Structures are given as C-alpha cells and as structure tokens.
Figure 1 (spheres, rainbow, N blue to C red):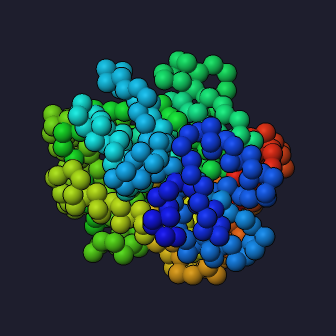
Figure 2: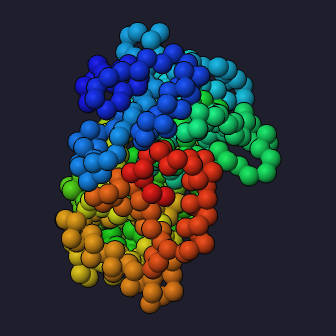
Amino acid sequence: MNRCLEDLGFLRSGGSFVPVNSTKALQTILREKISDGFSIFQGRRPSSVLQELLRNRPALKPFFVDLSENGDNNQQNPHNKVFEYRQEDQVISVETGITLGSLEKILALNHQYFPHVAQKESTLLDVINFGDRGYLEHSYSLRSMVLGLEVLLASGDTIRTGGKVVKNVTGYDLTKLFVGARGTLGIPVKAHLRVFATPEIAFTYIVSGGTFNALSDLASDLIKSGLPFTGVEIVLGSEVNEVRDFLVVNIAEHTQVVNELVPQLENFAQAYKVELRKLDEHQGSVFSEFLQTLETAFELDDSALSVSCSRSQYRSLVQRLEAKLTMSVHYRPGVGRLRLKFKNPDDRAMAIEQLRDYCTSTSVDLAVAYADTDFEYRVERLPENDPEVVKLKQGIKERFDFHRIMNPLAKL
C-alpha cells in the first residue's frame, strides 16, 4: 500500500479515499459498508500477505481503517487525542490512533511508561487488536493494562466496557474480550490504560551451556522463586544467537531492585552450572533489538505454530516433535506460550497431526494457533473442536458482528 494513501486514515479497495474527522463520521461510513458488502480491516496490514490471502478469497471486498497519526500534520486525523491523564493514579485515557512513540513522549515527562515491544510507529489500535506482548507478556499482561474501552461495532453503534479503574467493572469484563480479538468484533477507538513508573535500568542475560532439561528446570525455578524478572524465555535451535539453545532473562526495574536480583540470578546459574552472559546494560539499545529479532524469527506464518501448554506438556511436546521433525522452539513458561518454527508448511502440517495424536493418546486438550491460505490467524482445539465452545464463539461473533464483516481472515 502506498504510504501517502495510508496516512489519510481510511483506505478502501480501488484506491479511493474516505476523509474522516470523528468517530461519528466513521459510524456513518461503517453503516454504508454493510450495505455495500465490504469487509472491515484495521491498522496497517502487510500488503503482500493480504494480497496472497485475497487471491484465495476473490469475493472479499476490503475496507481499511487506519487511525494512525498523519505525520507532521496531525490535524487531518483526530484519533490521537489524550482525554485525561492522571499521573498520580497511573492511568491515561487516549484515542487508539495514537502511536506508541507519541504515547511514550507524553508519559516520559512524568517518568512513566506503557510497556510494549512494538515499533514506535505502531498504533495503540494495533497493540490492542493483536494483544501480543512479546517478552513483556511474562510480567505485563495487556488484558490487565487495558482498563476500559470504547468500541465501535460493525452496526455503527458504540459500546463502553470497563472503566478508568479495575473496581469500575461489575459483571462480565468485556474489555478482555476485545483485547487480542484481531479486529473480529469491533474497532476500539478509545482506551483507558494503566501505566507504570519507568525502569531506571534494564539488563538482559543469555544463559547457555545447559541441556534442554536443565534450561527448562532453571526457567521453572526462576518463575517459582517469585523474583520480579521482566521476562523469561526458552529458545532451542534458533539462528538469532551464536548459541542455538539458550535461556533469556530480562530485568527492568529500579536500580536497587536490579542490584538485588542480579546476584540471585548468578546463584541460580552457578547451581545449574550454566554460563551467564550479560547482553547489554542500557535500556532501549542492544537488548531490545535482540528481543525484537527473536520475536520476528517466530512470527506466525505458514511454517509456524503457537500452542498453549503447561511447562510439563511443553517438554513432552518438544521431545515428541523433535524425534521426527527439524524445528526451532520458543517457549514463554510464565504464560504457557509455545511457538514452533518448521522448515516448510508440510512439516508444520505433520506437526499438527503429531499434536493431535498426542492429545488423543494422553487425553489432553491443546489450543493451537496458525495461519493458512484462507486465514491469517486461526485457533483450533486439539484433538477436536468442542461443539459447545464453537457454538459459544459463534454466538459472541454474531452478537458483536452480526454481518460478519469484521476481519473475516481471522478465526478465533
């Protein structure tokens, strides 16, 4: 997509533009799109990936919603406002077109920040829709950081969920339903965010030299210790480091806390007889680039899988798959997220069948996410989808997006 076209905020197929200066104007446009048979996509999407998918869905008429700031002239796009900022309560209310870089500058004036791993030009809308925290997922859950939302539905109606503080929520917490929904239920146009004090210092350590089991045991012990490590990641067979099997431990805190944590981490490494190497001391430089490279290496494509599993299941799964397939492994033990990268789509298909057999033989259920020729993102339950769960998901989709026009390339 042409960069100058994207900057206008709203782009539809055929290259024509729709100027929008308010949420109310967007409501009107969405109602028109329903009658015209368009499907709604949010944020800046990789055009090559989208084109590949659209070749398999020729009847799909895409309409793009991009709320991002318009370069040096933000007046053309009003979806980056700050409505309220309570520094003492560590809560900020903003429109979701604000970029993370702009949000960062506002919060930095008060020595606060919104923890994220996305690029600075990414919008809050992208972050909320994808819900991906990267290594920060270990300690900063996005579902706990987004306190409330204003969401524009496909019907053109708006709803408000949550509030500015957690105790505002009564009954079902619908905010969590929209975080990570990949734009399948509505367009979050306003958000109340919890922010944090900016860490004074950040260290990232690479732990290597141990066996698969040793690294796994060490990661478990670090988590069980209750020490405030920002991130704990296990990587096997990766090309992003000279050592292919290693553990990543990130610490981002006040100086006094870091000074207390480092000796304890060194004691753990000594007990497991592994090598501990500090990657970098300065926040925002080498370590962030390394972790971003790690995230990119395991992006979900036609040769990758994401599996939700416990630490004990992770070991069994990896050992089972390694016996038959060549792959790279990334596991975030604090949240049970296992990512697998294979040489080609055929190997991934074989891995899915292996996982299905594993579930059948052990009576275990697993949630698996992947991309294919029809969907950019889909979630399946192994060994087979529970009809009741499928019915529940369909009911939620129909309630919020009756016309099924919100991102039909994602199936949750």
